[in-house]
Length: 294
Image 1 (cartoon, rainbow, N blue to C red):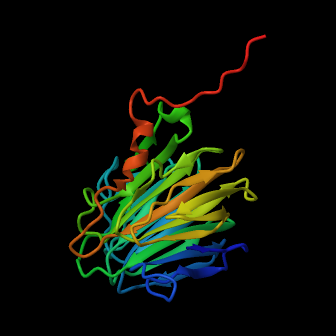
Image 2 (image 1 turned 90 degrees about the vertical axis):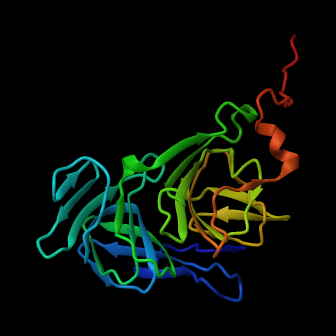
Image 3 (image 1 turned 30 degrees about the horizontal axis):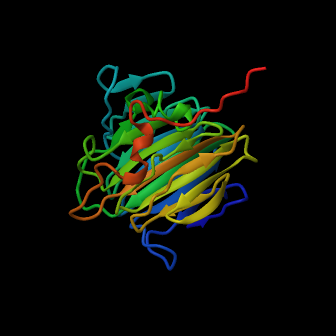
């Protein structure tokens, strides 16, 4: 099922997906958080939450010590787009920025329940995507920096390049065993496929799309039903359905993906549809166009 969002995000916190509704039982919420320069937003929640910075610059104050992995000295860390300060009262101040969804890896702040956070926009707009779900496990707040992101160029050198894409995994069951979520993003190259060969899994998943340029579009086949995709659309994936994607030629398609583990059945890897697995095997015989010689 596709949820349409033709207008720009509303200012403040906008809930785009409810974890349980008449439309689907997703087990997680998904929202946008859009702030104008100088505006602040304060929150605490009974949920585990992951804040992915999509656009702009922001200052974030977390009511606890935040862990990170990377260069720095005690109480301070810095890279090209993020600075981190541990404050005397036990809080953590983070400044982060992002100028491109396509060309830059994400910065993601991952919080346990009952964690206070305050976010202030430093640029004309700061935009976050927020994924949240129930989780009673108490873990340390964690900041995932851009250089930590696991980046893969999937299907490079197979299928004549028609399904080559960039997959950026922020955290999964292996790297964050305390979480009930798996989070990442894909860059779907213009005119090419992703989530291909077709695969499925019983755990619910959300895709949220951005197109560049914004008037672009793509397509998905959710099981046997096809949907056209547009800027800011959200796809709800349930029922163990295949969900391959394709972007129209000329248009890059970025999408955030977040998966909710099932109790007793966490997401580890997808199951590929057997009849299509041959296409990315070494030596697969795929027809190629041959121009007649004159």
